[in-house]
Length: 319
Image 1 (cartoon, rainbow, N blue to C red):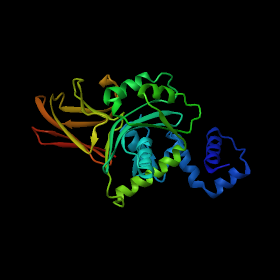
Image 2: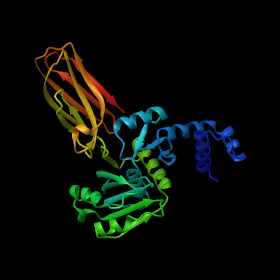
Image 3: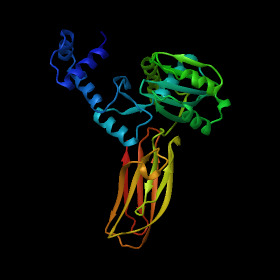
Image 4: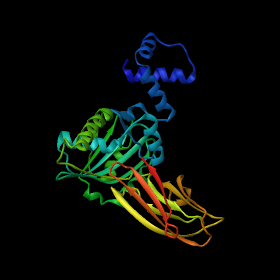
C-alpha cells in the first residue's frame, strides 16, 4: 500500500470519526503527523492530494484568483501552475515537442485544455478552457476552442489522464481531424514540468521565455454604484499586463463603492465579488475614478483606484 492510499484512508477515518485504524495507519500517523495534518487541510479545501507537488499548487482551471490566494496562504505555498502548463513544460524538455500543441489533462474531475505555442526559445500559452470530466457532449468545449484559434494551426493533440474510462479521446479526434496521443502518469509528468518551471524561474534555464495567461475563470470586472459591470482584464490575456480605465460615478451619502468581480459568467453581474474599493467622506457630485489593474508574471494582481478630485488612492492586492 503506497503512502497516498494510506493518507487518504486515515483522513477518511478522521473525518467520519472512525477510530478503527490498521497497524500500518497507526504507525504512519506516529511517523508523519505533519503529512496527515496537511492532507486534512487539503480535504477541507476540497483539493486532491495529487494537486500538491513539491511545494507547488496545481491550480484547477475553474478556480478564481481569490480562492487561489486563500489556498496558497493557508498551505504556505509561494508558487502555482496549471496541470496542462506543467505537462507541456515536461514534454518540451524531454522530447523537444514544438509547434502549436493542444494539451488536455483529465484527473477524473476536470478536463483542462490548453493551447500552447512552443519553439524558438518561447513557451507561450495562447488559450485555456475547462469542463467537467464527466461531461457527455464536448461540443460546447470544442466550439470555444474553435472560436479562439484556427484548428488547422494545431499540430499535435496530447491527452494525459490516469482515468482508464475516459470516453473523450474519440470525440476530440473527430473534432481536430487528427490522432490524439494518449499518455498516462499525470502526476509524474506534472512533477517533471514543475522541476523545469523552477529552473526557469531560478535562471538555471536561460534559453526559454515563459509567456502565460490568466486562467479561464479569472476575467476581472469593476461594478459601479449603479450596477454597471465593466470588464477590465479578460481571461486568457497574456501576462504581465496593465490595464486602466476612467469611471465617472457619483457619490451617494458621502461614499463611493466600486466592487471587484471575477469569473467567466456571460452575465457579468452574476460573477462573484472578490474585493471592494471604498471611498468615504466624498461629496455627491460626479467623480472621475481611474482604476488600474496590474498583473505581474507570477499572477500577483495589484488593483488601484484614484479619485481624481481628491487624489485619494485605494489599493487591493491578490497573490
